[in-house]
Length: 83
Image (cartoon, rainbow, N blue to C red; front, side, top):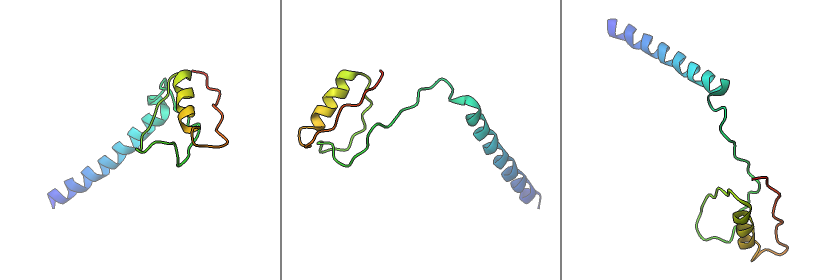
């Protein structure tokens, strides 16, 4: 009986611990971190393998769109991004 009550008490405390962690995250634990913005999502990119790219400059963005636009008619316009 003693072990059962300790087990139930531990479960109750662990549930409260998760609520506290979630509240800390909402109150700005991630403050100062940059957020990513999805510009375009499509099923075809001209690549044979699945990959996720993080583009950090305008030259890489133009290069990526030129690779996509090789087979697309009409091609996609390169979005204006402030790097």
